[in-house]
Image (cartoon, rainbow, N blue to C red; front, top):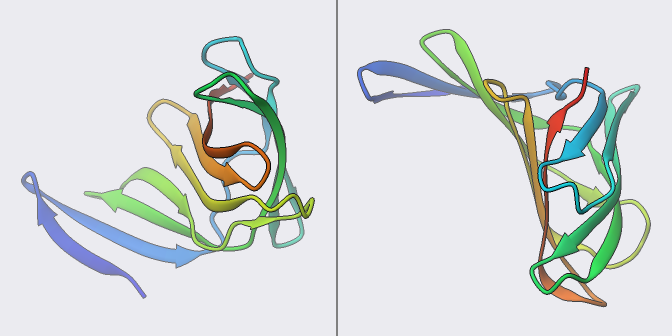
Length: 128
């Protein structure tokens, strides 16, 4: 399931599996949105809370993820990307993209909603 490639003088490898980001609270970088809570329940990663789209419309979310794609370079973890994120609240959220960056402990979530349209996002860092 892994694949490797030569990039920038090092070997980059990706593997798909059960590699959730750290559980806890992720605080919005701009202080505008509600914090996002990440919990691990069995083999599911759950993410819940609120975001604001580019027009300032607020929209909450609830996502479940069971598989992640982990990218490593020269043996160092670089990022996680959700493979199978689903809308658990039934609000019609789609085009869900969730990426966790190890070096900055940053979670970046983007998605579209049936009610408010495209371009919703949350960028937040893990709190101690």
